Image (cartoon, rainbow, N blue to C red; front, top):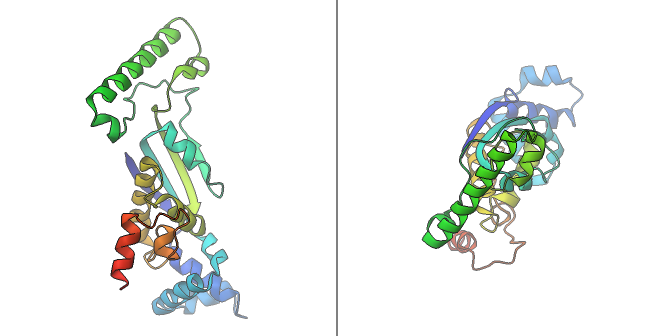
Length: 226
């Protein structure tokens, strides 16, 4: 798996702070931009997040390149609707890379054999169908969800905070959780105050929608809070 932050709004935190200040100022955005200080930006961002004035976060966008993940993973990813996606097409691109194998299967020799044997049959049949003249768009029907894919994703800061609440949770499926954790690590470097307290619901709101109070993360957080 590889997650890369391709590009993002220049000075994302400054843009957010300007937008927030514009809501309560007679000055123009350009005048606010000329006078706003770094300490103002940090204070404003923390204030809008604490007060739930999250619409101003939508002015900052982040674009990621994600590769080496399965179609099973991206099927979950594209459910996040406030985002833009451009995915490698199985209709036009012949799949020749290795399939994605979950760790639980890798650790079990019997399961690994069953999995690999099935994948090899799919790969062989896919190749034979193409050699018979079946178009890629039809041959792809035989490919499993373990098929590797590449996708470009753009989300605004507000959508990302929600994405992290859902997908950084230990109850989230392992592959998309790893993607979310990589994305969070990257955006923290360019917008540290926006994503300072980003993470699953137990981190951001001190609640567990899954009611998994025996979760290691929940236990860890409440040990620290004592």
